[in-house]
Image (cartoon, rainbow, N blue to C red; front, side, top):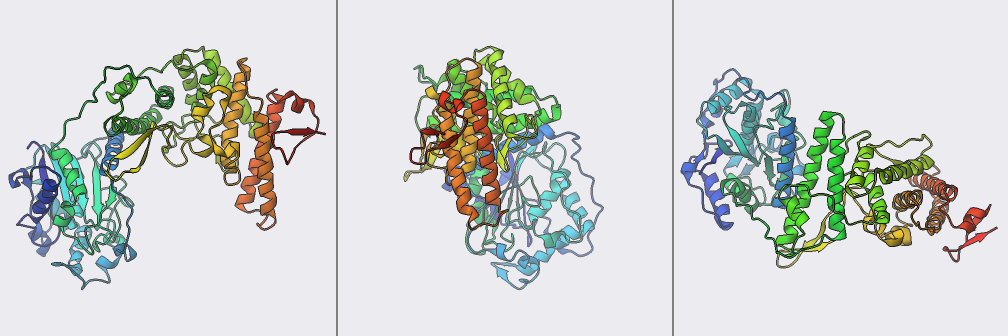
Length: 605
């Protein structure tokens, strides 16, 4: 076995009978893998150092000396995201656990026993953290051991605290393919009182990923994960029994065993078979590829190289998620894939599909301009989106004049809404207080329904939201904008969601106005019924204001938001009239009001 499994034990005698390996092999066998031979593991024992008074040594210097590991950090984040997708575990504790008494292990529960482990013995953990000579002795002992070039590092309880300390002291030739901490008390504030924080700089170029697994009912962990103190850690909560803390119980869990198996017994990537039949991209799939192309165009147009690298790293996370969904679509859903999707899975960004007529392309471009391709991450990319829209327009087969007029339409609409003027490209466009228009979230390739009884996810093609908000409600309209007549595919605008979601109504309508205005600038047919939808939404928002004014405090957040939305809607209606987007009867009338009985008809005074 090329990769060695290294185990750092907790307090006690150092687990000479390798109970940890027995538990791990139990989990591996249950998952259909071969057990790991003890000869392929290494479990150094440092219990005598911890239990003997007077042993000490000078702290060794860190061996991790990489000056710039930003690229490694981005790749670390991608691997962490993949683990989260594959493992399917939550990071949220549930049920009764020590999280209700986070200081209990080190303070008030000193006489409480957990199997053969007394909580009183956890003073050894604090002693290790706060006694620098002891830490130095343990670290020097570990540094003197013989390690394979590639290891899976598993650390339990006190061993996890030592392992965290050891990561930047490992011999330089050692690369940690996977770091797993189990039952760790390292996040307990009581451990760190009067001492410097462990691991000031995480060695991203040395450690591929870090999964911290905790039992919320394990009193040693305090019922909490490590990410609050160690941002590189990714927490996963598992239920292995009331007050269970044993390493064998942790490693016998199928989720934890699978973490080890992925590295020790890597499965060969199964190439998705090509059907030999020409498969056409669906409209939503084409839109997803267009969004990815736009994201890469944004990255190419970011002048600051550090920001560009950060943006590209976040974009690759998003692209990995889309590829994972494509693979699930092909394997679980048993659906043939278009050649462009095969190219994406193979690591190549396919060219922009030439599927859109000009009036459809306008809708796609406007939505792209309002889309944060790296949602939920927010990165100020300055003018890069403007240049990217021009680049995407050309790639779609249209002249750059089309992109220029789309950008002009967005800028003019934004100026009509924002008293300050100008469009903060690369940041957040606001139409009203608290109503963000950018960061709409990219469009997903597929939507996964809850798992069926057989355990397979039900996969359906369509639009899905990635991240908070996403293309939800008023923004779930990309497909509709691309269709004839620009019918908005949201219940919020067509009458269902206005009472509950005025901000979503506004977002959708800002996009609608931008699209129709861009079409007019390009001498394309545009939808004159847009004005009626604006008027209807304004009327319903005004009704909400009247209802809330009777009971709410004058400056309540809800009333403030509703008034801002109404003001923005009024500005949009004025803009529509001034730009010739309204029906002639509306444009000709000096005064107008919405007929309450028939909201689609206008009475001219």
